[in-house]
Length: 232
Image (cartoon, rainbow, N blue to C red; front, top):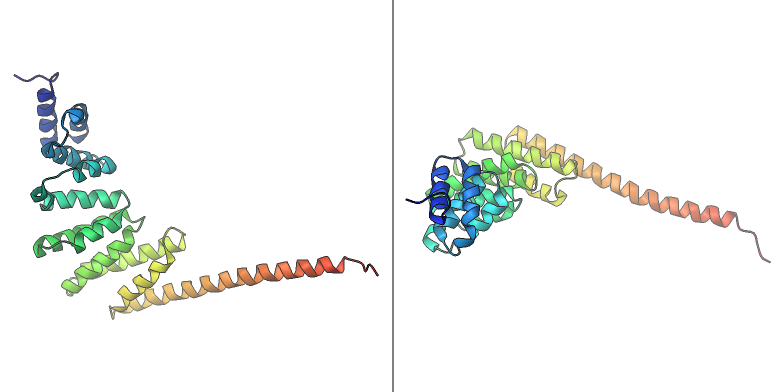
């Protein structure tokens, strides 16, 4: 009978705790046998999902990408957890690329819904930006589903707020405007007007800052010349 002091025993304990959703405890046992599980896809699968389930997304991603079995890598469970790790490791663009490369239409739609909602939860580090793109695609597929429009609207507003706070890329606001222009809803037009006004005001403020600095430099030069006497 295997005991907790053997590799087999610890592996059994890890599996039992994993199946009981006691991920933090399971990870202790998984970690203790990691060096003995080189190139073991079953171990990488279980440990990777267990780590991600405990919120250890960086370590979870490392385990999942180590899986070599191509058939397993195509399963929705694997894709789901890998995408979740990408999102929470702030590499949301990788999650979006996984969706773009997906083939199965049923799984693709489910994955798109997951990305839209999970990115919304993430928010920062392009979370809202890709959430808006995902909800936009969902809304195009199901135009009667108002929840997708509400998700898109919320993500667009969330991203705009981040840009205003200096936490997002301003150039991506033009993508957001394009997404909103595809809807003829009054709310979409209002958000576009607010974003455009902010962009115009921000541009004017920057121009004032540049012109102001140049003017200050010119005045300083003039004042300096006034204080100089003639040598002749």
